[in-house]
Length: 289
Image 1 (cartoon, rainbow, N blue to C red):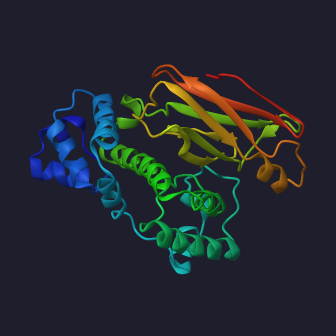
Image 2: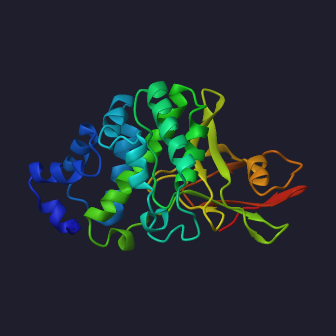
Image 3: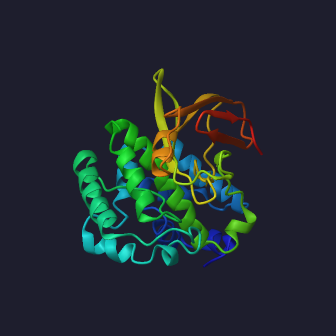
């Protein structure tokens, strides 16, 4: 690890090498190198996001994807998910280890994904089990090319921020790494978090509702990183869709509402928490904190 002061003092070549460890898009790395000195850790996070979302192109996004190891064969997946609990660093302590069937299905899905989109499956995998990853990739396989690239580049920046935390000492404590949008699903019929529920955030692009982020609730029913740190939605209307049908089926229940969509309006850069309280025959929401 290095300090922010160390980063500011590095030569251009050394700074390039450091930033390239976080994201291999040359245009993004060049922008970060030239943006020094950063006045604060928050300044660094904001510049990382604006350079990525405002200044980089589709080609830059795809270039960044090449910096990740390919996950597509059974043996590499077995190794990656050999001990889900250890791999997730305790974030999913109640999740079972991946079984052979899940590993094989994930291998096939990764291959199908690369064949369809032309690049490997990009997802911020921290804290996610193999079953959760399988559910996410199967959802995203249904996307059109343009929509999936939009989702994948959001996931890429989540990974970049995680790597920046590994590079800069104290970054997590000194910078605001929270997501502009978060969610929490609670099953009030049995008094437990609604875990393993697929959730899609959508916004309007060209007057059509398009996916922005795809996630799955953790063991506490939460998704805390709907958006990467430093990314803020423009003011306007958005939708969050909860796959309640799959959730109830996985719990051997029958629900009246196969899906719940909450439409909400973003006014500014303040935090927006979109919770869902569900029962098999009703649901409610509110703006949380």
